[in-house]
Length: 309
Ligand SMILES: C[S@@+](CC[C@H](N)C(=O)[O-])C[C@H]1O[C@@H](n2cnc3c(N)ncnc32)[C@H](O)[C@@H]1O
Image (cartoon, rainbow, N blue to C red):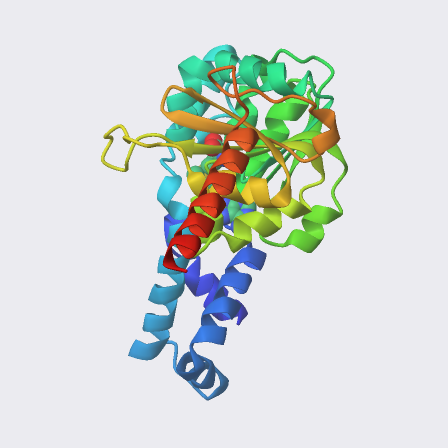
């Protein structure tokens, strides 16, 4: 197994993923692929075509959830050599597509989030990427910030940055899908799940996001989505109805706003905190609208049944 993991990680863009995560992906692959499991249990040759196929398949799987988003520049590698200056931080934020897009909007995004949640004392950032480098845009000097991702070299970079800037917090290697671990994390005010649902759900249903959302020990979870397609076109209907319905079912309060090319849902897990929750238009809450819609659908169904009778 460990030779296989080493071979999988031989591709440069996958080399900094933690062994633990590669092992998990490999196990998932073998669970689905009995032939491969049998092959590895027998006396196989690392030169055989089938061994190479297993490596290729697992790499594809890893790229889907991990590699696709990285655009590593020299800037990250050089961080340790350079000063912890504003320019360096900006360059780092520019080196990842999500943080690059947010760069001119960070202050506005955090202002809008904290207007809803009130200033937090502790934030957990899941699948953080390079987002912790936006810490200074939050303007919260007493904040404690814990960040989690699979990318071990970025975790090291974030920890160096936190240390140099005397920021209270730490970054850790953690697979967000391991909800048992997530449940044990410290209770926080806010958790970020920025652009993470596609990564977690892997094109299937939204069960993984639901489990993660339920497990996160925070009063608020901020989930974000792009509002442009992969080809850069603005989406006509960027809102994700599925998450609105999911929150409705879980009785979580919901608010949303759009900034730049991103849509943010601020999800309140403790309903009692929100006697009144207003949406972007400032009139009716999303929750109220959804309840109305469900009621109308029920009434229409009853009418139809009555007509048939
Ligand atoms: C689209 S990026 C989003 C980064 C960051 N949240 C942002 O919006 O700036 C997805 C991130 O999730 C991380 N990731 C993917 N699967 C993960 C998992 N199962 N557990 C933890 N992190 C994961 C990747 O390494 C990558 O940094």
